[in-house]
Image (cartoon, rainbow, N blue to C red; front, side, top):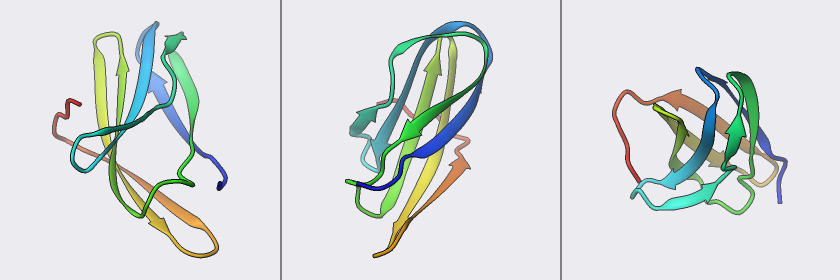
Length: 93
């Protein structure tokens, strides 16, 4: 297992929060949490040690708010590189 990557997000409202990770085919890989959070900044930990290099999608649902970002995971023998990019389309998994 590698070191977990922090994903920091600003939540627009108090809500039930459910950040999830999907593969390129839209299959859910992991639900990071599913709990009530207050509005403001929160950090979620993403463990990529068991995932292959590739493109993944991170979806954050908080009440009526939904955001999807593309994650490009690049692994080498010594470390894991993680790139989070905005995705302008909608994704439903």
